[in-house]
Image (tube, rainbow, N blue to C red; front, side, top):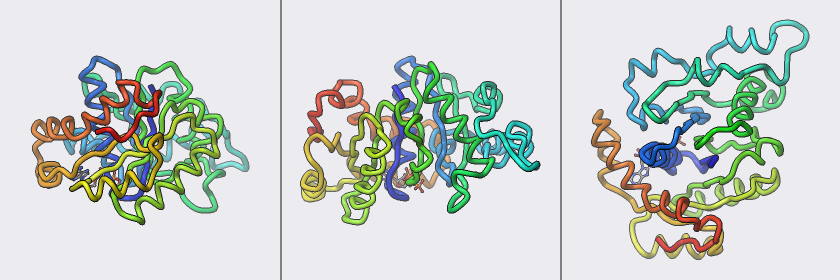
Length: 261
Ligand SMILES: Nc1ncnc2c1ncn2[C@@H]1O[C@H](COP(=O)(O)OP(=O)(O)OP(=O)(O)O)[C@@H](O)[C@H]1O
């Protein structure tokens, strides 16, 4: 199963991506967790110690490696560099989870043409189109780097939204983009829902088949995110996303029987 998580800034993408990674890992899967969000907080949310994170900079910052693989610096550079070894050499091992910190893509006009983006694209393609158990991509809001080819490798795109108009509008924009590039399954996940009114707002904003489920606002999650207590954090994280994990595992994504949780 290959899952891409996206949504507006701060809605809970990393929380959902990390929680799902922990769930799949506990079930015995080898999980590849890819942090393609510019703020690269997936490692911290997964409980990786700061020293370990500092020892493995995000791929986007590894200028020499990118230069070596893409041949950048001359008049031309390679658009699909060889990256087979990148996953093993540059990921952080957390028992059943391999964390690959990519960092954000380069923005604006250079998006399709710079060596850094070609390099990151090659890594994402190799993961999505390769023979891996579970891949979870924390994408940030920008999915424009998912191409039609790569989109076929994604089984499920989860678009996280808070129960606010602005967040729902962003989710709609991402949903449209994801449909255009041919992502096969796209589902909305409501997050930080505090009461039935907010849940109803989400249920009226999306069709039954679009909304997979909702995650409740969790005070503990919010409070513990300030503290350095990875063990406690892991349990809270796992509990917070367990209904979404169950809906994915239980086949509701296939059946389209959404928003029951
Ligand atoms: N259900 C929830 N209840 C309470 N707090 C939550 C919940 N989900 C996420 N949070 C908190 O909201 C904050 C933002 O969450 P998170 O980092 O997962 O969002 P994000 O979408 O990945 O953000 P960014 O766009 O900055 O990468 C974090 O402090 C997180 O602990």
